[in-house]
Structure formats: C-alpha cells, structure tokens
Length: 511
Image (cartoon, rainbow, N blue to C red):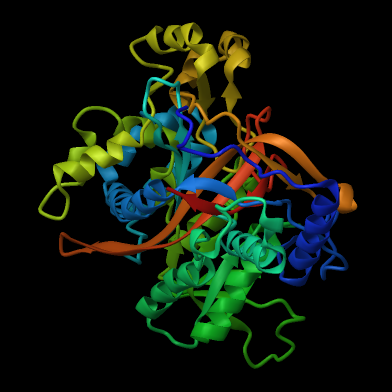
C-alpha cells in the first residue's frame, strides 16, 4: 500500500505512558457505560457485576475522503435494501424454496413463515423499519494498485454496537483531552476526531416508527436473547427513547413471548403481558406494542423449537411495525449480496432521477468479486478451490464465527454436500493495509492488559429507513446516523466483538 495513505500506527509511547492510558481508559469505560456483563453460566435477573467492553487504546487512522464517501453512500444503500425488501418475487427466487432457502434450513424456515403470512393474507402492517449497518474495510492489494473502500457486508437485523461505539469514540476524545496522548502524534488533534451520535440517530429511527404507528401510549418491544451479555448496548437505546422521546420499552425473549404475546384477531393489535415484577398492578394486564425491534432472531439457536418460529409468525402478523420484517431480514442475506453484483440487478432498484450513473458506479466500486458455490455446476466450487488462499466462504448467517477462510476451504468443500452449495458464497478477501497496529485492551488485564498487536480494522456506517408500499407507490424515509470501528489482531479471521474476536475502536481522520 502506498505510504502516505495511512501512517504507521500506533505512535510510540513509553511503558509508563501505556500503563497510565490503560488505567484512564478502563476507568472511563466503567464510569461511562462502555461495559459488558461478565461471562457466566447463567446470568442473574439483575446484574451484580460488569466488565468494561474490549477497547483499543488509540483511535485508528482512517482517510477523511473515504469517511465522507461512506456516509454519502449510506443513503443509497438504505434505499437499495428497502426496495429489495419490497420485491417479493426477487426474494422468493433468491432466498426461497428454489434458492438459498432450499439449501439452508434456517433461511428456508424464515421464508416459509413469510410465505405463510402472504398465503393467509395475514400481513396487516405495510411499513417496515430497518436499522442498518454497512461494514467496510480498506482494500490495499499492493503498491501498484490504488487502495479503496470495500464492503464486507450489509446488516439488516440486530445491527449492534451503535451506542457502545459512540462511547468508544468519546473514550478516545477523553484520553486526548486528559493527556494529549503525550504528544505522540500530530494527527491526534481535536479536528481529526469526528463526532459520533449513533445513539440518538438509531433511537430516532425507532421513534419514527412509533410515531407512524400513532398510538402514543404504546410501547416498543425489544426481542432479546436470554442471558445477553451485550445488554448495555441495548439499554442505552432504551434510555434515549424514554428520556428524549418519552417512549417506553419492554424487553422479552422468544420464550417469554410464547406465553405473553397476543394478537387481537380483529384489530391485529399486538399486546404483551408484562413481567409481574414490572407490572404489580392488575389494572393494566398487557401493553400495546407499536414497534418490534429484533435483537434476537438472526441465528438458528434463537429458534430451537417450532414454537419459536410460530412466535415469530405471531409477531409478524400483528399491526406493530417490525424492525426488521422477515423479508427485510432475508434481504440482508449473503446470497442477496452476491446476486446484486450480477449484471443488471443493481439498475433494477436504483433507477429514476434520484440516482445517477455515478451513484451506481460508486456502489459497485465498494464490492469485491463474489460468486455462488453452485455456479454453473461445479464451476463455483472449482474456482473456490483454485483461489482458496484469497477467499472467504460465507453462509446465510449473522453474528460472527460462521465463515470459512483460506487454508480451511479445500477440506470444507470436500465435505460440503452439493445440495448445500447454494447456501454459500465465495468472496475475494479484502487486503487490509500492513504496518497497522494498536493496543488492544480486554477486561481482566489491569494496567498490563494493553497488548500491542498488528491489527485490521472494520468500519461501519449506521442508517435507518422506514418504508412501505401503498397503492403501488413506494414510500421511503431514511437517514445516515453514525459509525462504528471494530479492530482485531491481524491473525484473527473473524471480526465479531460479541463473539470475542474484536475490540471497539474509533477513528482519527487523516488526509
């Protein structure tokens, strides 16, 4: 990668300075809600202890022009995925029983529930809400080719770490204000620390859906996983909704909702019975729900029995606005990401005076080469074998820890049934810049816990879209609302923070 695109990083500091920064960082994180629940076999009903979230000691350098470009692209991506979610025929073909849903049981089960809703004329809410995150990495293949911004994936369900990423950016601003980072680098100046207001932005999207539902006393339902360690990332949204928008939130798991959720057969209103500890009064036995925000439901383990899929169906059949609906969740599948790269597909959605040929070119410029493993008989698999060291194989999964990389690909392909190939895509690996490092700080290490590592960073842009179709007219309202940085040791293939691979980071802009 041409030197000058990014500086060598991190700046030089002494051991004493590293100790001091680590103490300041971990204390700040614990004091300002940049926290996790500790690992436990069973999480207690009320937290009894916390640990700070994994963080970097320095912000990571990121080119200013690509930061602004990614922000501009988010509007186009918001509209693109909204339009895909409203294209039943496309999703049926790509993700249904004749597409990825045939090869992947989880995808197939979701699609079947969506088809059942349509067959039974049980969809009573035309609006969809998406809280999105488009993830990128800097691609720097070699000295002779220009570096660029490449998309890793587009997330349409449980796009997490928005609120903790805002606090991670605040952490680095605090360290700069408190220490000036000991003058370690002239790049570490206040004008190079971009503001991040993801918490208010994501809450604004949820509040927009709540207002569209138009029952002021209704609540927003967060569907959560049992024993969620990343609970505080969700709680900050809850607090913002209450304090800024006067909207109440309740949290329940699929197990709880199987007994507490009810849809009125005539009005299609979703009502949820509150936990007794939260609702000791017998005068208000249940609460009307305006918006269902899924922070669970993106992995097969969230649906261990048919009852769990039935509960998802019940929620989808209600008049509450879903974030996301099943079709919007399906739109975020890796198979859709691959199909979009095929000729003519993008133009189908980004047409009209709003989008120019330059907009389409800018979107395409963010894509790596990818293909389906079932492409042209054995061609997709043979190509993956030949190029294995430059590839990642991706299934229709979210949450980290699901991909197959490089040397592991040939043996994986040996054991992959032909019937399962359609559920996988092959994607060229993004070549991250070299000579990038940082200090990674995980809980439990004390002031010695900042480990210097060669690293790779992933940059995400958040956005929301409230959209639907009435009288054959599409209506889309959207906004770009903030950003995230996750950084991992270079030797780690996976990138999920919750899965334990990455730390939360922020950026310092470079020209």
